[in-house]
Image 1: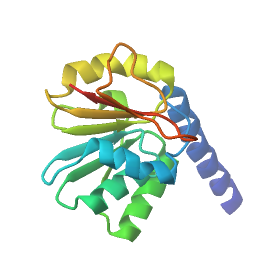
Image 2: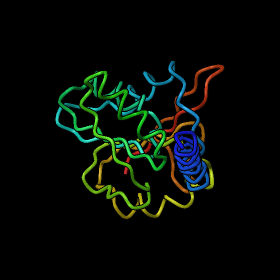
Image 3: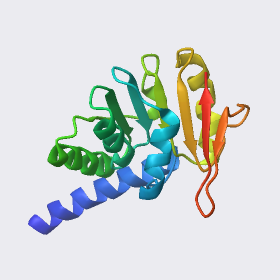
Length: 170
């Protein structure tokens, strides 16, 4: 009986991760060495609000919250498995990062000063209208690896042997 429950739970978690991958991106974490580059580009200030869409285990969120404890930091993740892992890691670290199990396309972005994305190229095209509609003027957006189609980056961070980072300002 227990193995059946375990099997069902495993299928639910794996299905959730697969669904999240099809909706925006499979779980591929931001390289640890690049988290500092992301942080430098975003330049999150005390009292500002930050969101990572498709945060996985919330590695970037935890780093930003550690660097700027007075910022409001939110990770949005669609995969139950990844959101649970991120929630647990945040809890164990005492980070204060808020995790939301939610589809990035349904999360309201109007209150954020900074946003980070590491999604598939086709997802950037799909989410761009939402970003344009909801982000407040002056918001900073950093995308990892791929540019946001139709947007002009104000800065491109290039490091030999590492993925590009694209900084945008709305």
